[in-house]
Image (cartoon, rainbow, N blue to C red):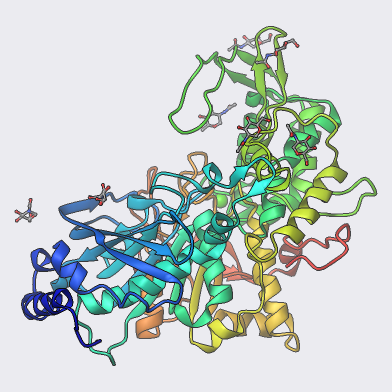
Length: 585
Ligand SMILES: *[C@@H]1O[C@H](CO)[C@@H](O)[C@H](O)[C@H]1NC(C)=O
Ligand SMILES: *[C@@H]1O[C@H](CO)[C@@H](O)[C@H](O)[C@H]1NC(C)=O
Ligand SMILES: *[C@@H]1O[C@H](CO)[C@@H](O)[C@H](O)[C@H]1NC(C)=O
Ligand SMILES: *[C@@H]1O[C@H](CO)[C@@H](O)[C@H](O)[C@H]1NC(C)=O
Ligand SMILES: *[C@@H]1O[C@H](CO)[C@@H](O)[C@H](O)[C@H]1NC(C)=O
Ligand SMILES: *[C@@H]1O[C@H](CO)[C@@H](O)[C@H](O)[C@H]1NC(C)=O
Ligand SMILES: *[C@@H]1O[C@H](CO)[C@@H](O)[C@H](O)[C@H]1NC(C)=O
Ligand SMILES: *[C@@H]1O[C@H](CO)[C@@H](O)[C@H](O)[C@H]1NC(C)=O
Ligand SMILES: [Ca+2]
């Protein structure tokens, strides 16, 4: 601690010493005066200045989470909600807000947790922060400096048409999280009067964009983290965002815009057909790889589908959907061709593979067409996330592409490669050498729903494989995989959708207790062999399940799950991107 010199500093120091002696309850900790007295020294990170006058605190008693939450179990806990602003030196008008949820001092377990966002948001607030507090961790989140906790980065990414806001880009890319955790960890030590030699365990948890944010830290600041629980990360950014448009271009190229009910029926029938391939008839396709190897979608041609008329709906979050008529027909050859082409993944006009795609039995969210009542036809509906990447970050002059006229497979390839180059150091987030993190003893639990319809499951498999091959180049596949499992484990969650359970496969498990499993691994050296999971809906709700660690795959024999090594299945997850002229990790 620095020697107080001014009367104000002296006064603060007095408050600090009296407060710390009595800092036994949430009430003691949760005051503006106490928090101010415990702020890290204003210059402890070069280039940022904390604003003591910005501190707010309020106690929240008996907050609770429900049993079907995806990222933590049911719990009841009280916490102090503390917010704080800081600025970057030399940037006029700059303000970044951070929020920390502080557990009751009696329940504090020397842990700190950073949490991330989703889509273009860096903050997901109460969807993420409870996971920290319930495990005795201070849980932190940031607004990235984008204006408020409810402002997403896309709202501020353009200063003017043609002019990117590079500060916001870098903050979103990785800088905001580094600052959040640096401040959060020191602040935590001060607030709970931790002795200098007491270890503060540092964790990260996030899914989707929040997963990308987690990897952005592990790839750059290896020694900042003891463990991370990361779901379905939106990394390999330019490929991931552009691939959202691939399904649109498949329909445009094939000249067939399937009614939504037709694609839904294809998915339902695929689930029924592939359910038992994993050895257990439970409505869950736990082996989408066997489904791909053994099920021919063409057999679905001619099956009847029916969906009743639906009124127009508006949603607070997404765009409203127009009214749809009764859909009564039979699955066409054209729709099956759309499905097959989507699953094959993007290839260029010369047939060379450019990117990967969704698993068989995932829904075709990106194919979704819209009904035009004037023409009584189904039309292309441009995927919002894909369009936004092109308009905002490549063209830098809009937030939407209203049509995809003239866009071909080769255009998509070009966008992916141009974006890869332009955003290599910010959003791409697929740096495969994790040596500093590994050397510092870090652990990662990385999971991905096997029926994810927004970020292809194979995207995570590819990254895991990149890390394996870069870090263990001289070991065989199996030996490298085993070595990697000692500190980085990947789990494909049977039947699960994007960072969530899947209503079409309700009996599937979800790894709700990841943070607890990670804590046990980091702090008690309990290395997971399978991933603990729970059925969160349907007739078996509450039951415990285990998930096999990649590259092992589940197979039920006489009702008992085994984790088998199946080279043919593993091979279906790997793509050779011969259409891209340089390595894509
Ligand atoms: C929180 O719950 C506990 C246990 O049920 C109860 O004793 C306490 O009064 C509650 N606190 C508040 C502020 O509601
Ligand atoms: C936390 O504090 C911020 C700033 O005062 C406030 O906007 C937010 O609603 C608070 N959240 C909770 C859960 O109390
Ligand atoms: C960019 O131009 C579009 C119209 O082409 C306009 O709607 C938008 O407001 C402009 N954006 C900025 C940040 O100036
Ligand atoms: C697909 O299955 C779900 C769940 O069983 C059902 O709600 C839906 O109506 C089915 N869709 C079609 C097109 O049959
Ligand atoms: C769908 O169309 C078929 C053939 O036109 C007809 O037999 C069937 O009754 C229709 N189904 C419904 C639910 O309207
Ligand atoms: C429906 O089709 C008509 C005729 O092609 C077109 O003018 C109109 O813009 C379309 N409506 C929507 C909502 O796209
Ligand atoms: C937006 O940017 C793209 C790429 O630079 C350009 O082709 C297009 O004309 C621009 N649109 C507007 C409205 O300025
Ligand atoms: C594993 O999950 C079950 C519920 O399925 C839960 O009761 C148990 O505490 C979890 N184990 C760990 C280590 O989190
Ligand atoms: Ca099954």
